[in-house]
Length: 220
Image (cartoon, rainbow, N blue to C red; front, side):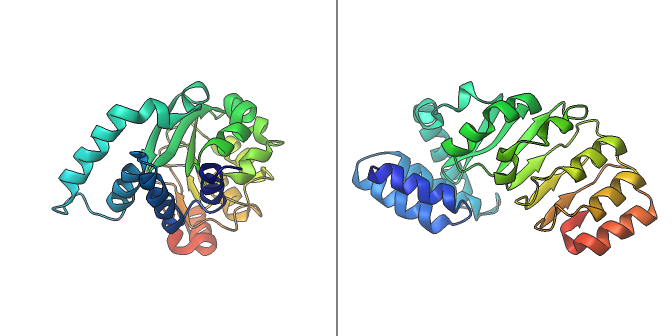
C-alpha cells in the first residue's frame, strides 16, 4: 500500500476526524500536490460562518482549485452517481437512485469518505435495500422531497442495515402518524443524532413519540 492509499484508508475509516485529513494535506503539500491546500481550505470553511470575514477569500480559493482539478479529484464518481459535491477536501454528498446504490454503493463507499447519499425517486423502491450491506456503512441518508408516505416509511424503518446512520433526512414528504410511530419504534435507528421531518403532516401523538425516542435530535 502506498502512503497515499494508506492516508486515504485512514480517512475512510474515520471520516469525521479532520485531524487525519489535515495530516494528509501536509503530506500532499510536501509532494507539491495542490489538493493539500484544497483540503485545508475546505476544512477551514467547514468551521466558519459565511458571515466570517475570512469566508469570501477562502470560498474564492476553493472554487479556483475545483475549477482546475475537480475532474482529477472526483476519481470514478462521475460514472457512479448523478451529482456530487466536495466538503472538507473530498466528495461529501452524492445523488443516485436506489437501484444504482444497490449496484454501486460498495464501490462508491470505497472511493470516497462519503457523508451523505441522497436517494432519488425512492418511495416505491426502498424494499430493494433490504439486502444491501453498503447501506450499513452510510452515516447520512437523505430521502427529502421523495414523495414518501407512511407505507414507504414502514418499509424504511424495517431495513436491517440502518444501524450506522447518524443523519436521516425525511423532510417534505407525506409522512403522517403511522410513519412517525414506525420510526420511533424502529430498532435500527439507535445511533441517529439528527432526524429531519419538517414539512410532513405528523399529528401530536406521532410528534411526541418521536421526541420521546430521539429528543433534541428530531426536527419537526
